[in-house]
Image (cartoon, rainbow, N blue to C red; front, top):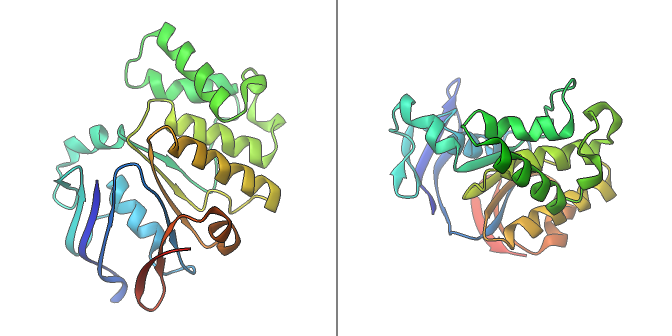
Length: 218
């Protein structure tokens, strides 16, 4: 489903990623781990089409994202949900409206929006918070809403960049368990994180970015 072929990215003359090759199959749950500056976020930006490699290929569904036209990018992004460290919820909108907006912008009808938002909140364990505003939620609860927003249109892939970076240990574990539940529905999960404890607890495939790249199961 996702293939990085000999990918290199250079910032300011310094290679952040050099000759990187890896694949992620449909339905997999994969961690990309490593310290800050090792290129984890850059790999996700390639998927989001917000960055392009300086050389090599990034293939998604056999389409080369390093060559894709700008007009094509919105359609690709509809098939890939993203969760960031900051939930970035709209403070004046309810939980329902924050999630529904992702469907309204692509033209879903009102009845289906209501059904999808309700079911997605049930999946992440936030059904009882549907009418509240983000300021009344804890950090972990806000991140659950952000996850719901990312998956409400049934993306093929859910990618997350340090999704538990601002959370305490218990809240982080809850969030990672939600990712596991989503993966069990068939969605491919790709998470960039330096939280080694959570990576160890989850027992998923790991692509570790350090001085060299290795791929292992832990």
